[in-house]
Length: 238
Image 1 (cartoon, helix red, strand yellow):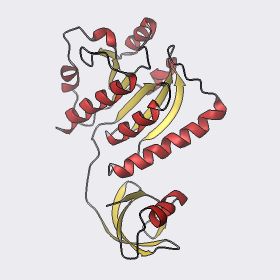
Image 2 (cartoon, one colour):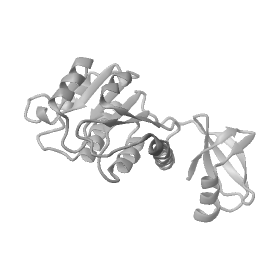
Image 3 (cartoon, helix red, strand yellow):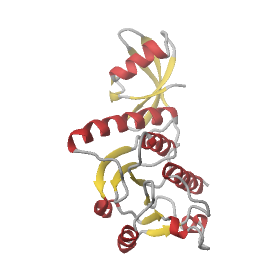
Image 4 (tube, rainbow, N blue to C red):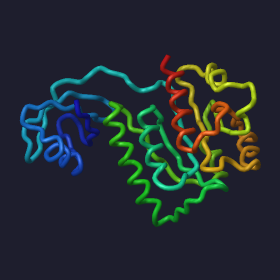
């Protein structure tokens, strides 16, 4: 069933223009069709009372909990092209609470303040669509694009940096994640193409980030982020 994140309350539901277009023109819903709406992180079953202008009635609250109990932050060094869009989408599907773009020494993409606002709006639109598709009740946020030194602002109880220099060591990601308990916060840091400069790894280590290996093979930037989050989501869902 199609899900929409809406504003307002159960007595005054406000759909975005994009959602109205989606309901009327894409899904072509009719009167009495059922949809799900999320209001203030609560999920409700609703029926379409009128298509144009759009009106819905709440039927009941749905008791469900698909969210991970742990608060996960992804710090992702900006990659080239549209790879970031893919990572934002998949990170949302995999349960993160927030995403922060990072400018590292090997980041090629340049972002000025004029572009940042538009980018953040687009990124959060991707998050909304992915959150609806994956049936989330809490939308993560693409918080900001920061310089590398600012990663200290996003530390959690558990902090990991995916470092290719650990690929041939004996430690495994499974072992590193096994000790995380329910509701404990986690931050993971993933580099752009070319990984991290040694000085950046040293800086992260000084802040308390632990180097972790994602296996013996060297992964692309976007693959590393999605793989790391997939393993983490699996471990926390057991």
